[in-house]
Length: 145
Image (cartoon, rainbow, N blue to C red; front, side, top):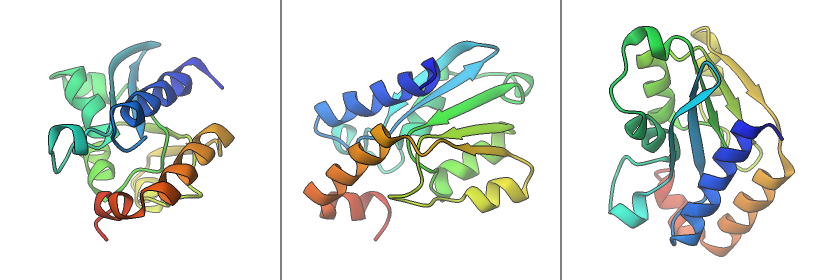
């Protein structure tokens, strides 16, 4: 596992340890992590702080030219909200830990020119599978079901 996906996985584990949903993300610009985050909906009582949104928030305001040269790493396939942010800011590449437990809007991202790479990381799959089995109601809330 490369160091950026490992950083995203570390964020997911941090979220789980805090009692939240184990999804982590990092925004990388030219080999440097600008922002890291994890799903904090439970911890913050937030409607929007998915892992990707938290990483973007923690990266702070950036010029459009920076976003266009970034890679977003996320442990789970991005949902419609997070995919919208990826498209809004013109992030050209997304590396996904896994999409077996949840298939997000990868087709939409690809149709809009985003390079989406899915790793099918067993560590990501195992973590989400265990969480979904242990907390199905919380998981369904997170994905709007």
